[in-house]
Amino acid sequence: MKTRELASFGGPRCGLVVSKAVGNAVTRHHVSRLLRHVFLSVAPTLPPEATVVIRALPASASATYEELSRDVRAALDKALRR
Image (tube, rainbow, N blue to C red):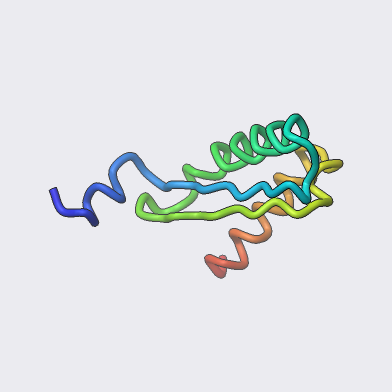
């Protein structure tokens, strides 16, 4: 298999960047779990070869799932120009 074929195998991919600016380890892990679930909910609408990197800002530490979901969806819509 070529590298390009391996990259698209299994659908869209997501990377998370949650720095120490977001909070302590427990807070960062909580934000990571929320963002992972947000991505899983939008993944079926993305092209299978898509690679998405989500960077959590410090405000995400106090954001709800709905707020994070709204922000991620808006960013993806803007990036994909839907």
